[in-house]
Every structure is written in C-alpha cells, then in structure tokens.
Amino acid sequence: MALEFLNDLGKKAQAVAVVAADKAKDAAELAKINMAIAGEQREMDKNYRTIGEWYVSEYSGAIPPAVKDLVDSVMASKAKIAELEASKPVKEEAAEPVQAQPANKTCPICGAVSDSKFCPQCGAPMGE
Image (tube, rainbow, N blue to C red; front, side):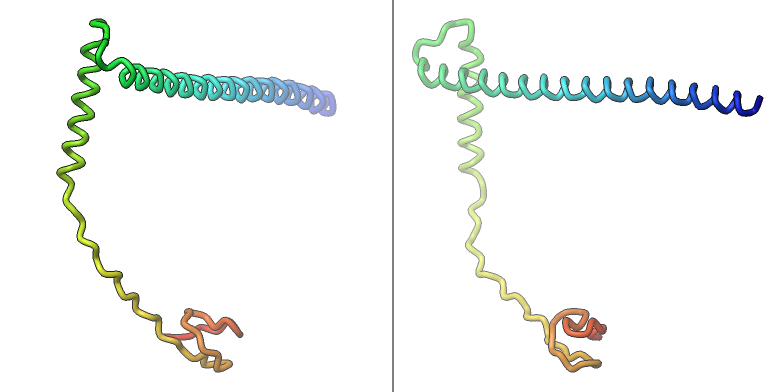
C-alpha cells in the first residue's frame, strides 16, 4: 500500500515537472520572440529617422505644409544645440598630473623588492 502511494506520488510529480518544463519553454520562446520584435522595431525606427533626415536635408526649400511645423522644430533644435555647444566653457589644457611612484619595499622574509602589498616571490605581506 505504501509502495503504491509512493509510485502514484512519483507519477504525479513527474507529470507536474513535465507541465512546468513546457510552460518554462513557452515563456522562453515568447521572450525570444518579443526581443526579436523589439529589435526589428528599433531597426525600423532608425531607418525612419534616416529617411526623415535625408528628406529634410534634400528638400529644405520645398517642404509640404503637412510637415513644415515638424521641420521648423527640428531646425530650431539644431540651432539651439549649436548655441549650447558654443557656450560650453573652454577647458584649459591641464598639465599632466605627476603620479606619485609607489615606494618599493623589501620583503621581511626573502628580501625581494616590490611595490605591492604582498611579496611576488614568497607571498609574504610586505608591510607598510
């Protein structure tokens, strides 16, 4: 009787494990598909942006009224960016900072000289 119970319990656990594995596989597949869709959307957005930039540069004088406000807004943003770039403070070329050379220490165990915390020869602490 106890053996039957354990066999039934094992079969039920196995069935639950199979269902859980299937659901995990489905979730992973869904995540993979969603990532692929997001990647394609980014690529499409990049291409639309490139088309828009080309259009504005190519037809700057003959822009249809339907997109004139958008183009004017882009041009205003470009002018503002140029103005902000010009207002950046000019960095003075600083002299290269002199880096302090670490002091070489002598290992108290084997006498090796090093600038590290531990001796490269024997591994002992180099001290202060």
